[in-house]
Image 1 (cartoon, rainbow, N blue to C red):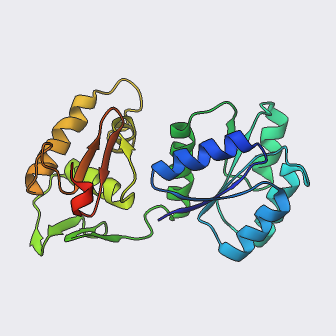
Image 2: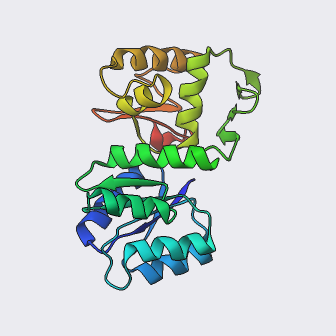
Length: 231
């Protein structure tokens, strides 16, 4: 599971982001001050850091430099400061991306995926096992109970993305953006069709799911098929 550190002193924003990113399958730790965040980076080595610039103990731009001196961890600035000079200074000091408040969880998650891909962290676990399902990114193969699955290219891409966020809900809009590069204007029917094909190859149906569990009005999650996960 990808680990994220959120350095944010606003309780409401911190809580909302932790909940939202947690629902997407990320392990999110938080710190309310810059120095606590720096200590966490050094001690826990998270996969990515999101930080506000308006912190109570140290300016966020200074914190970026402090973190960058100790780690090459990807950093995303989340701030209400939307002026170009501040953005340039943040990026020059070592931030990888910059998001201006207000923002949605899906927007932040997309930025996270982008910086993690650039850093080679998001899919560091090339072979993923979920129950009897094994998905190998390096060979682009998948098997169920030792039996190879015959998957088309997009089917594999969808399955690997869901497996890489095991247990987390992935929205259809995210699937369109990640797999089909259609963040806007794409048809969710495309996703439905590919999920239907995957279910057939996994030996299940939408009415009787095992691995692919739909979350009504939200998206789908891939789970280890324990009895309590089947609805």
